[in-house]
Length: 109
Image 1: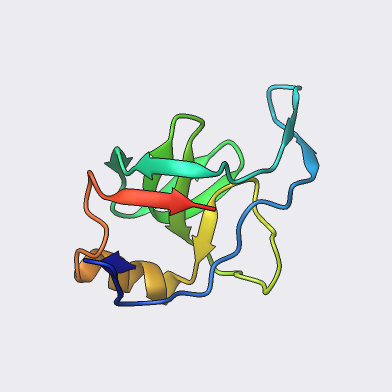
Image 2: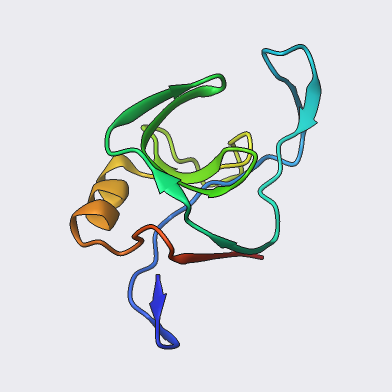
């Protein structure tokens, strides 16, 4: 998390595997976390059950349903379908301190 060019917080994150996966709709997709400058457009304060699994307090920043969210497992390697996973504790901190409110910029690179 950066404010006015200064790093405030750094969180361990696991992103998309860059491998292919079979979606429940029968299609095959690439599990990527798309590079770019995005904006948090909507969020859910609690568990959200999506087609690809559960997410804790997701903050969505991409039209394909990609979010920063808490998850029980945050390995030291890319392991998601494209979301940016952080620990449950980190996501609780992000919410309780309002580090990433709706409208916040998300830069993926």
